[in-house]
Image 1: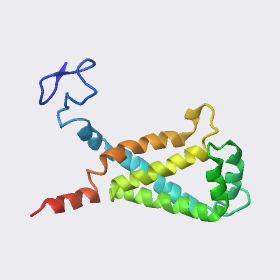
Image 2 (image 1 turned 90 degrees about the horizontal axis):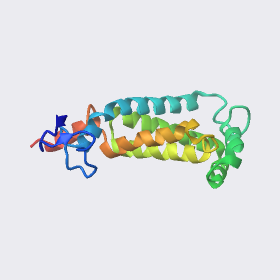
Image 3 (image 1 turned 180 degrees about the vertical axis):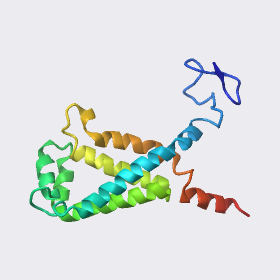
Image 4 (image 1 turned 30 degrees about the vertical axis):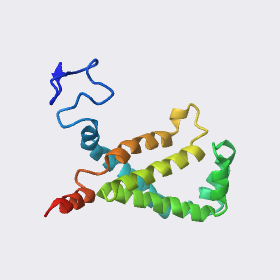
Length: 179
């Protein structure tokens, strides 16, 4: 059985404590989340950056009508969306909505990869994933076939931890601490 770094209490099935009384070697659950946030940042940031670029460079996607267009996609999911009103709002200007999503994904991807306003980028990624889950992938049966819910959950640790490692946020924090 491993002993807690500061408490000497066993860490295991019976000694982990949900209240945070047993701490890991590096200071607790917050430090653990921070330590493992880098792989999530790389994956989610790269994925969102790619998704934004893919949308902006797809000749069919950013149109209101036609095969492969955002307008056609929105019309196809409207009947099965959890919130059809969100789809109706997007259908007022499908191309504008497509550009907004693509630019949002680019901003989230760049911010996440660079660790620039990491929590804000994670919030943006979570909101994009939530809106896509409630509109595009809501009809997936069973629910776990839709990947937007998994992306939403993956953003939560970054929302909690921020970008403390290898990031612009960390550099800015270090500069603020210097006399």
